[in-house]
Image (cartoon, rainbow, N blue to C red; front, side, top):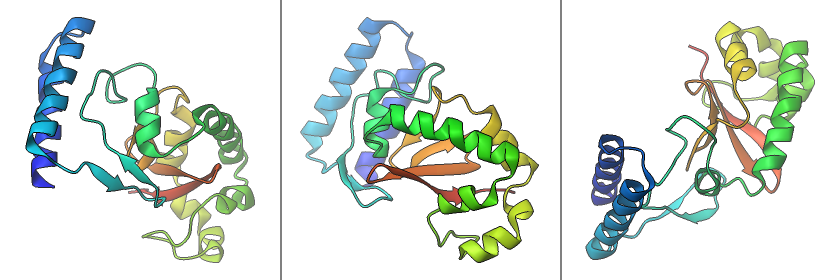
Length: 176
C-alpha cells in the first residue's frame, strides 16, 4: 500500500510539474502505468459503498484540475450515472435553500461520524447544516466536483456523497 501511495504521489507531482499539453499528459500516463506494472502492486481498493474498483495509475486529467470532473474520476468514485447524480444534486440544492430537513435526512447514510441517527440530525439540523455547509452545497458547480475513491465532495469536503445502487447519499458532514 505504501508503494501505491508513493507512486500516486509521484504521479500527481509529475503531472503538476509538467505543462498541460496532451503530449506531456500521455507521456506521464504511460510512465505511471509502466511503473505500477513493474512493481506488481495490487491497486484494487474498496470504496465506501463496498464496490470493488480498480484504481487508475494514469492521471491525464482529474478533478484536481480546473474544469469538468472526468469520467475516470466518476468511475473511481463509484458513481455509475454521473448525469443522474448531477440532476439529483440540483434538487438537493433546492432542499438546502428551503431547509427541507426531511428530504435532506432521507439522503444521509446513517450513522455518520458526528451524527448517529435521523432523529438527532433533524433535532440539530442547524448545527450540522451551518452556514459553511450550506454555502458549500449552494456554491458547488455540478460539473466540477472533486471525486475520488471516497465519493464526491462539495467545496473543501463539507459534504461527501456516494452512489448506492443508483441512489445518492451523504456519507460525511464536515461542519467545523
